[in-house]
Amino acid sequence: MATRAAAKKVHLFNISPAPGSLHHQKRVGRGQGSGYGGTSGRGHNGQKSRSGPGPKPGFEGGQTPITKLIPKRGFYNQNTKEYAAVNLDRLQYWVDQGRLVSTPEQPITARELLLSGCVHDVKDGIKILGDGKEFLRSRIHLVPSRASKSAIGAIERLGGTVYCKYYNPLSLRDCIDGRTDRIAAAPTRRKDIEWYTHWGNRGYISPRAIEKMPFVEERLKELSKEYTNFKSQPFATK
Image (cartoon, rainbow, N blue to C red; front, top):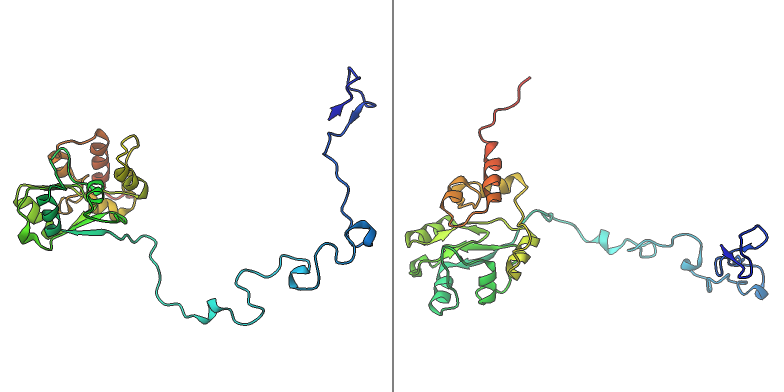
C-alpha cells in the first residue's frame, strides 16, 4: 500500500491502494456508450463468438475428421534405437587415407567417425558390421555402441580391440562434443544391462572387459560388480 509523502506514520486515514492496482470492472452488453455494447467485444456472429472453450483441435464442423478416416496399422516402439552402421572395408579405406588413427589408449569413437566423414549422422550410436572383413588389414581399436560377432572376430584376429559402450542421447552428444566434465550415463533397462555385462558382446562393464581395458574408471568397476551380482543372488524365500 502506498502512503502520502507528507505523512510520517501509517494511519487508516493516509493509506491508499498502490497506483495501477485497481481497475474498473468491464461490464459488457450495457449499451454503446460503455464501449462494450452490441457484440460485447466478440465481433460478429460465428462459432468462435459464443461462450465456452470453442471447437477442439482437429474438429471439422461435424464431419468425420481425417484422423478417423485414415486406418492405423502397427505401432512405434519408444525404446527402439537406430544405429549408424559402419562396415570394416569402409574403416580400412579411411585408415589407408590417414583419416582415422587409433591406439589402445585413444580408440576410435563416434566423435572420430563423425569428424572424419566416415559417417554423416551418428543417430543413436555406432554399430560395427563385418561386411568387407576380408579387406581389413590394419590393427584398429574401437569403442562403438554395438558390434556384430563377425566384426569382433575379424578385428581381434589382427590384434585390435572392440569394447561396446552404452550411450544415452546426452552422453552421446558429450562424446561427439569431446566433453569429459560430466559423468557418462549407465544402462538402466534390464535388457541393456544384460547386453553390456556380457563379454561375448564385448560389453564395457563385463568383468573381463574391466580387466582387459587399458584405462578403467573406478566407477565402472563398481558398476560391473553391482550389475553382475544379481546372477549369483538367490531368490528371497519366506
